[in-house]
Image (cartoon, rainbow, N blue to C red; front, top):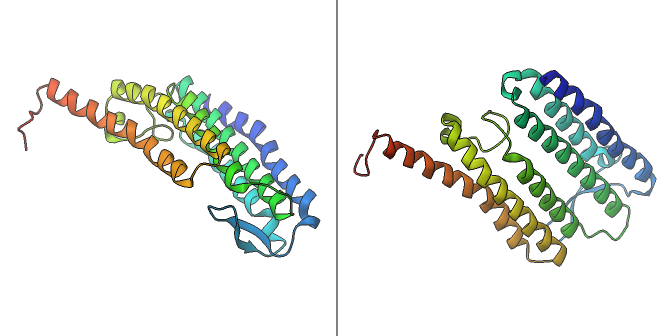
Amino acid sequence: MTTATSRRIFGWGLPIVLLGFGAAFALYDALPDPVPTHWNIRGEADGFTPKPWGAFVIPIVSTFTFFLLAAIPFLARRSFEAEGTRLAYEVSTFSILGFLLVITVVTLLAGAGFPIAIDRVIPAGIGLLLMIVGGVIARTDPNRFIGIRTRATLSNEEIWRKTHRLGGKVFAIAGAIVFAAAILGASILVLVATVLIAPVVPIVYAAYLSRKATFRNGDSSPNAS
């Protein structure tokens, strides 16, 4: 089954990667030399790479990401035996590759002189990515490659499931906040704070559940050192 997961990622992910290269070739002549390849939080280009590499920086990164994500289920088969984990991994993989494609297209268009609001489009994409991840993360089973992997969640299946149910909701809400903030042009601090806080909530919750289970099982007490 995990081999099938790798095949599906190759089958659906490769066209996404190739679309990024297609966009780079299509816009190549319209791009300046050097090509803008990095933007600051105000959406201003502040990093440049000479041609021909400048046009293909993100597609190349997407290619390495694609091969890595496709190889993991094949190399770590036992971690992907559960259907929920496989589905979450596949959806997350396609979402990441799709997000990289969006970054490729919008940065190339911006580099070619099109009026693209980089400071809004990319954060909005991050928000959508968080919402998608939040929608599937609750279905994952304990594994070491996807999900909220802490000592508490990996040592107790019940804590894993409760943490990921909460984590799914938190990531979905955080994604909606980031998306809305990006569209409305809110301060970048709102986006950064939301992205940083979102993973902390389920991690703290998992630690709380672990501590609670320890007390309940009589292995420790509030006065223990």
